[in-house]
Amino acid sequence: MATDKTFSVAGISKLDGEYKVRFANDIMRIKVLAKSGHEDIRLADLEGQYTKLEAAKIILGLEDFADAIAQSTILEYLEDNSPKAPKAAPVKAPAKAKTKAAPKAKAPVVAADLEDAPF
Image 1 (cartoon, helix red, strand yellow):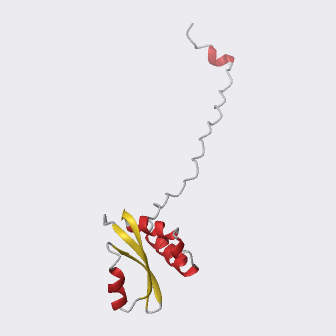
Image 2 (spheres, one colour):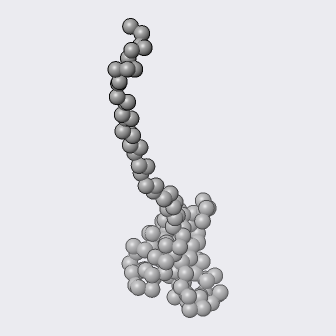
Image 3 (spheres, helix red, strand yellow):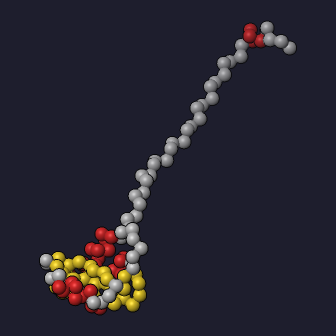
């Protein structure tokens, strides 16, 4: 749905037993839908220009679309067409801190080794 189109009319209609959200720029779209065999046509004038998602959110709160069928149709549309959140990269386990190795024990000093040592 990467489009910048805006609409001033939105609603729902039933065609072949299936409800769908409809968008138009003129309320007279009702006549075209009726001629095409749509039933239970409910369109609302939004009094402004809105994207499809914005228009669907607006009609979701209107009294004409408060019944269960309209609500489920609009909510299904919103779920299917809302931008998906990008998948988060899997969280890596924190790296284990490297532990310092215990210092090597020095060899004991033997007096015989010191005899040849320079002063």
